[in-house]
Image (cartoon, rainbow, N blue to C red; front, side):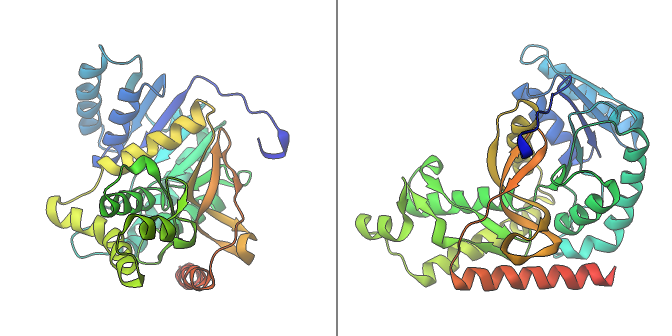
Length: 319
């Protein structure tokens, strides 16, 4: 725990703000995994939310023990985790940054309502643009460092690992790597830290006779970057991937099984950066981001990360 403090988990209660495709998929995934004892879905469209809750409840009676129901902001009290998915979704051809004007206002309204009833727990921001909204939510909630964080590059990292695994024709469990920076166009692959079966990826590909050079790395990074947009183009939205990633983070928080993930939080001097929220590898546990991991990258990776920092600062200064 941060500063060796102990944090007692309550009733394994999760509130999900927003019951659109993302929020409902998260509720469904949490229920299937039996991660939370209590899941409350909160949305201004109570009729649709009730339908989503009934649909999930009807299927989990033989698979889990979660109590899932429709509530309101007063149910944010005594939560171990509050997941915010509310906001306008990305349309075909839009970047996540295009959502700023609408979703900053929505986030402010959501945070004001949460603060009325908040007593405990971690705030996890999913809404896009997640880095900007994480920074603003952190500012507005006024909680200890790390108790508000965003999903950030956790899904991008999962896509990155899958892309590498498919190229190397090996299972994802053997690939270790991550992206940092923005959940968006300024995501940065940290190739200097990628391993396959514990072996540096350059060495692994050389030994296995797999073509490996800057051109290949560029193609894999670009494929990872555009994957979300390609899914939206094909089916109109993304929601299953992020729901799975939220389960991974929720398990670390609620069931006190700390893990490491590249998530977004307001930086406090890591890599010499303050005053923006971006993804770096972080230890996730019952109090949220317990520690941001400081490590050395290659010079070109630092340059790309600092470009992301400057772009985030420009956006924040324009708000």
